[in-house]
Image (cartoon, rainbow, N blue to C red; front, side, top):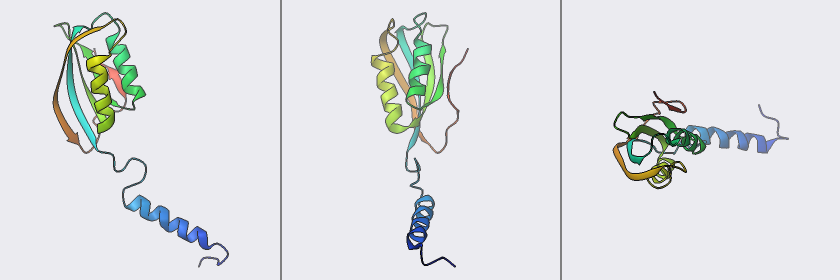
Length: 124
């Protein structure tokens, strides 16, 4: 059995066991969501995709970004709901330093149980 000289070790072991089993470890309680986006304005040729990828990675999000033939930028963002909300604000108000955002359209916003992508990347 356990040595009576280490009663705290037994308590600590049970604490971690219950913490892990309850799903509260790390980000177990974090609600994940996904959203598609399309950004209109002067968003091509101004490093918008690069800045979007960098900002998504900085926020710890997963997803992708891509130029369209219509001159817009489209993509998908996945991750914790609060971080996805931050990214939506950035996409609609900030963007790259040389961009001009006229309109940001967000669609297909939904809760997800797992991430579909690993990392944030540019599609071609």
